[in-house]
Length: 175
Image (cartoon, rainbow, N blue to C red; front, side, top):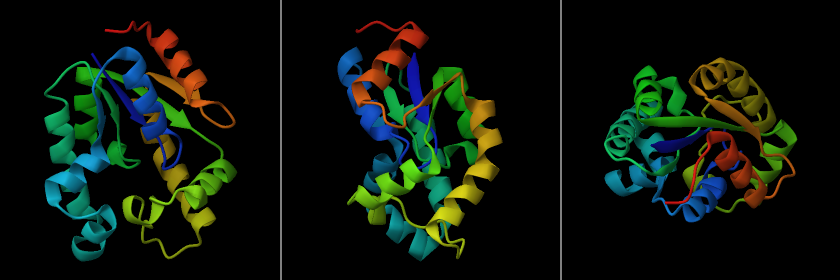
Protein backbone atom coordinates (compact mmCIF):
# COMPACT_ATOMS: atom_id res chain seq x y z
CA UNK A 1 0.00 0.00 0.00
CA UNK A 2 1.15 3.53 -0.84
CA UNK A 3 0.54 6.56 1.36
CA UNK A 4 -0.26 9.72 -0.60
CA UNK A 5 0.05 13.10 1.09
CA UNK A 6 -2.15 15.76 -0.48
CA UNK A 7 -2.91 19.35 0.44
CA UNK A 8 -2.11 22.94 -0.36
CA UNK A 9 1.42 24.28 -0.67
CA UNK A 10 3.45 24.37 2.53
CA UNK A 11 1.14 22.18 4.57
CA UNK A 12 4.03 19.80 5.29
CA UNK A 13 3.71 17.13 2.60
CA UNK A 14 7.43 16.85 1.85
CA UNK A 15 8.66 17.19 5.44
CA UNK A 16 6.12 14.73 6.81
CA UNK A 17 6.60 12.44 3.81
CA UNK A 18 10.35 12.16 4.36
CA UNK A 19 9.91 11.51 8.08
CA UNK A 20 7.17 8.94 7.51
CA UNK A 21 9.13 7.12 4.81
CA UNK A 22 12.14 6.93 7.13
CA UNK A 23 9.98 5.64 9.99
CA UNK A 24 8.20 3.04 7.85
CA UNK A 25 11.35 2.11 5.87
CA UNK A 26 9.45 2.92 2.65
CA UNK A 27 10.86 4.78 -0.34
CA UNK A 28 9.95 8.47 -0.41
CA UNK A 29 8.69 10.05 -3.64
CA UNK A 30 8.00 13.73 -4.25
CA UNK A 31 5.94 14.07 -7.43
CA UNK A 32 7.03 17.68 -8.02
CA UNK A 33 10.68 16.64 -7.81
CA UNK A 34 9.97 13.78 -10.23
CA UNK A 35 8.41 16.24 -12.70
CA UNK A 36 11.57 18.35 -12.52
CA UNK A 37 13.81 15.33 -13.14
CA UNK A 38 11.56 14.04 -15.93
CA UNK A 39 11.36 17.40 -17.73
CA UNK A 40 14.79 18.81 -16.87
CA UNK A 41 13.39 22.21 -15.84
CA UNK A 42 12.27 23.66 -12.52
CA UNK A 43 8.53 24.00 -12.09
CA UNK A 44 8.60 27.78 -12.34
CA UNK A 45 10.30 27.51 -15.73
CA UNK A 46 7.89 24.84 -17.00
CA UNK A 47 4.95 27.06 -16.01
CA UNK A 48 6.53 30.24 -17.41
CA UNK A 49 7.47 28.65 -20.74
CA UNK A 50 4.64 26.16 -21.29
CA UNK A 51 1.88 27.10 -18.82
CA UNK A 52 0.06 25.30 -16.03
CA UNK A 53 -1.76 22.88 -18.37
CA UNK A 54 1.60 21.52 -19.59
CA UNK A 55 2.76 21.11 -16.00
CA UNK A 56 -0.46 19.28 -15.10
CA UNK A 57 0.11 16.82 -17.99
CA UNK A 58 3.63 16.10 -16.74
CA UNK A 59 2.29 15.69 -13.23
CA UNK A 60 -0.32 13.20 -14.48
CA UNK A 61 2.41 11.13 -16.18
CA UNK A 62 4.47 11.09 -13.01
CA UNK A 63 1.50 10.14 -10.82
CA UNK A 64 0.73 7.27 -13.19
CA UNK A 65 4.30 6.02 -13.01
CA UNK A 66 4.45 6.35 -9.21
CA UNK A 67 1.18 4.46 -8.80
CA UNK A 68 2.67 1.49 -10.67
CA UNK A 69 4.80 0.74 -7.59
CA UNK A 70 3.76 -0.18 -4.05
CA UNK A 71 4.91 0.51 -0.52
CA UNK A 72 5.90 4.17 -0.91
CA UNK A 73 5.22 7.45 0.84
CA UNK A 74 4.36 10.01 -1.83
CA UNK A 75 4.23 13.79 -1.40
CA UNK A 76 2.10 15.22 -4.20
CA UNK A 77 1.85 18.68 -5.67
CA UNK A 78 -0.90 20.88 -4.25
CA UNK A 79 -2.95 20.69 -7.45
CA UNK A 80 -2.79 16.92 -7.97
CA UNK A 81 -6.50 16.68 -7.08
CA UNK A 82 -7.46 18.86 -10.05
CA UNK A 83 -7.27 15.76 -12.25
CA UNK A 84 -9.83 13.07 -11.45
CA UNK A 85 -7.58 10.38 -12.97
CA UNK A 86 -4.85 11.25 -10.47
CA UNK A 87 -7.30 10.91 -7.59
CA UNK A 88 -8.67 7.59 -8.90
CA UNK A 89 -5.15 6.18 -9.24
CA UNK A 90 -4.17 7.30 -5.75
CA UNK A 91 -7.33 5.85 -4.21
CA UNK A 92 -6.84 2.57 -6.08
CA UNK A 93 -3.19 2.12 -5.02
CA UNK A 94 -3.09 3.52 -1.51
CA UNK A 95 -4.47 5.68 1.26
CA UNK A 96 -4.78 9.43 0.83
CA UNK A 97 -3.91 11.76 3.70
CA UNK A 98 -4.93 15.41 3.52
CA UNK A 99 -2.55 17.73 5.36
CA UNK A 100 -4.03 21.11 6.25
CA UNK A 101 -2.78 24.35 7.78
CA UNK A 102 -4.28 27.77 8.42
CA UNK A 103 -3.54 30.52 5.89
CA UNK A 104 -1.17 32.45 8.24
CA UNK A 105 0.84 29.24 8.71
CA UNK A 106 0.99 28.64 4.95
CA UNK A 107 2.10 32.23 4.33
CA UNK A 108 4.81 32.03 7.00
CA UNK A 109 6.12 28.71 5.67
CA UNK A 110 6.15 29.98 2.09
CA UNK A 111 8.14 33.06 3.09
CA UNK A 112 10.61 30.99 5.13
CA UNK A 113 11.18 28.35 2.43
CA UNK A 114 14.05 29.20 0.09
CA UNK A 115 12.72 26.71 -2.48
CA UNK A 116 9.35 28.42 -2.82
CA UNK A 117 10.21 30.45 -5.92
CA UNK A 118 11.42 27.55 -8.04
CA UNK A 119 9.17 24.77 -6.80
CA UNK A 120 6.06 26.79 -5.91
CA UNK A 121 5.49 29.41 -8.59
CA UNK A 122 2.56 31.78 -8.30
CA UNK A 123 -0.64 30.37 -9.68
CA UNK A 124 -0.90 33.29 -12.12
CA UNK A 125 -4.04 34.68 -10.55
CA UNK A 126 -2.72 38.24 -10.50
CA UNK A 127 -3.74 38.49 -6.83
CA UNK A 128 -1.65 39.15 -3.75
CA UNK A 129 -0.38 35.95 -2.15
CA UNK A 130 -2.89 35.79 0.72
CA UNK A 131 -5.85 36.34 -1.62
CA UNK A 132 -4.48 33.72 -4.03
CA UNK A 133 -4.16 31.19 -1.21
CA UNK A 134 -7.64 31.91 0.14
CA UNK A 135 -9.32 31.67 -3.29
CA UNK A 136 -7.38 28.57 -4.34
CA UNK A 137 -8.17 26.79 -1.07
CA UNK A 138 -11.84 27.63 -1.47
CA UNK A 139 -11.87 26.04 -4.95
CA UNK A 140 -9.76 23.03 -4.04
CA UNK A 141 -11.16 22.17 -0.61
CA UNK A 142 -14.05 20.05 -1.96
CA UNK A 143 -11.58 18.16 -4.17
CA UNK A 144 -9.20 17.55 -1.27
CA UNK A 145 -12.05 16.32 0.92
CA UNK A 146 -13.41 14.01 -1.78
CA UNK A 147 -9.96 12.47 -2.29
CA UNK A 148 -8.90 12.03 1.35
CA UNK A 149 -9.14 9.04 3.61
CA UNK A 150 -8.02 11.03 6.66
CA UNK A 151 -7.24 14.68 7.45
CA UNK A 152 -4.37 15.86 9.64
CA UNK A 153 -3.86 19.45 10.79
CA UNK A 154 -0.18 20.46 10.73
CA UNK A 155 -0.21 23.92 12.36
CA UNK A 156 2.21 24.19 15.30
CA UNK A 157 2.88 20.45 15.38
CA UNK A 158 6.29 18.81 15.13
CA UNK A 159 6.83 16.62 12.06
CA UNK A 160 7.44 13.55 14.21
CA UNK A 161 4.12 13.98 16.01
CA UNK A 162 2.27 14.37 12.71
CA UNK A 163 4.00 11.26 11.36
CA UNK A 164 3.10 9.16 14.40
CA UNK A 165 -0.50 10.38 14.18
CA UNK A 166 -0.82 9.35 10.52
CA UNK A 167 0.89 5.99 11.01
CA UNK A 168 -1.37 5.16 13.97
CA UNK A 169 -4.56 6.26 12.21
CA UNK A 170 -3.71 4.22 9.12
CA UNK A 171 -2.65 1.21 11.21
CA UNK A 172 0.76 1.00 9.53
CA UNK A 173 3.86 -0.82 10.76
CA UNK A 174 7.49 -0.33 9.73
CA UNK A 175 8.57 -2.65 6.91
